[in-house]
Image (cartoon, rainbow, N blue to C red; front, side, top):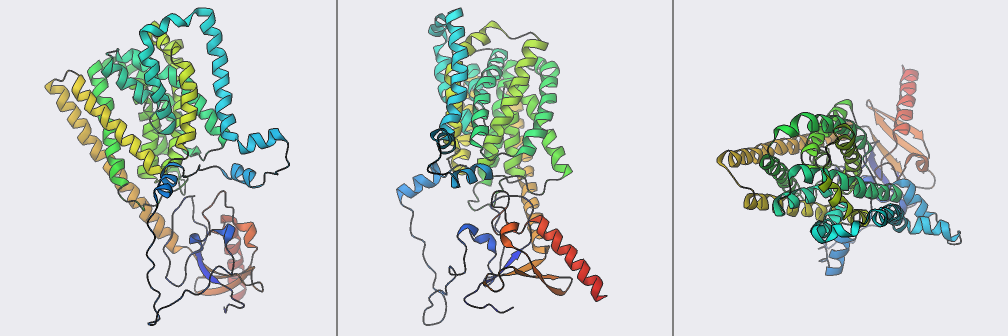
Length: 500
């Protein structure tokens, strides 16, 4: 097909399952529309590049990023919002009522304020009635710890328990059972507040992980509290917790050495076996949560990032929502079913609630603007510090040292296998992408709705309105929807039948 009036003919692949920043390969003179932002795509954008005397386009050296640009990229990248919220911001009427503009334009501020005020009203009424003030002189160190713990919980995949448990058990010598119960209780407040903020802000989430990991986590939590946790000694709990997650942090570090690695917003091409993987992930994470008060969040994060290559910007808020539900189940089981929560755990809870209900939602807002590599860097630091502290504080025996080294080695192997499986999965996705039928899109005014489809060795001409096919909120830019692809296949089958 010949282009007319400065028209552009581009070659694209039909609907690629999943969402994300996966960039397909393309021939030098047939760039895929996946490289183009459709909101600004038009036929005047593609003007010929200037050539040197030899007729070859010179290589243009990219200017070095300034310090301000570096800060903006890594610490103010922007939130990964759902299509609904993005559209609401774009279509906001400047003359709309003040309350409508407040909810849409300042949605994150309102999202932090609502759970904060809710918990503050409850806490202050209890504090005045039961005189919580006498609890602070002997337990203020936990309040200070949770200032940082709650913010880290909202910013990263590691919940407040991942900070509270090692600090309480290693630094202050508190019994692991008390630290675990406190972690479950405080996260049932802080993480639910952060989860509300995430829902309110309409931050991008991986709902498959939330649903199936939650189901597995509920079963794992119950079995872990009933049968596994009572059979472990306090040193085993401490060392096991820090060793497993140090292994994960190291695996994530190796993966992120590839700075241009391709990531997705959600799990691409969701299938039954992926559902089983998520269920087992939640089950194992629930067991870890039963032992240390945190685990299902990090397990989900590791599988999403290492195996399914979901971006940390999606995996992090997903882990926060997961942990919120898992801790509520754990708190309920310990108090209602087992009736074993100690008074000390409640005292620690009383001095921390007004802090975490602000810190966790505020951390989720901050973390939603950080670059995914910054979020990963926080995980490296936290897990490394926890491991070093454990070896320095916990009384070590030969058996415990051997067990901890074995856990780290096994963790390296396990997470390495997961990372390798994720790499092979990416290759299979790329192969599937390259095998899809190709289309030629002509953006000229005369043929803006005409599509050439090559399939089964035949060339077909079809007509479709591009604006109806591309949903920027749900798909990669530049890919045709599944509905359009199916419609084209039906038309091709009809044409083949007529030719025969």
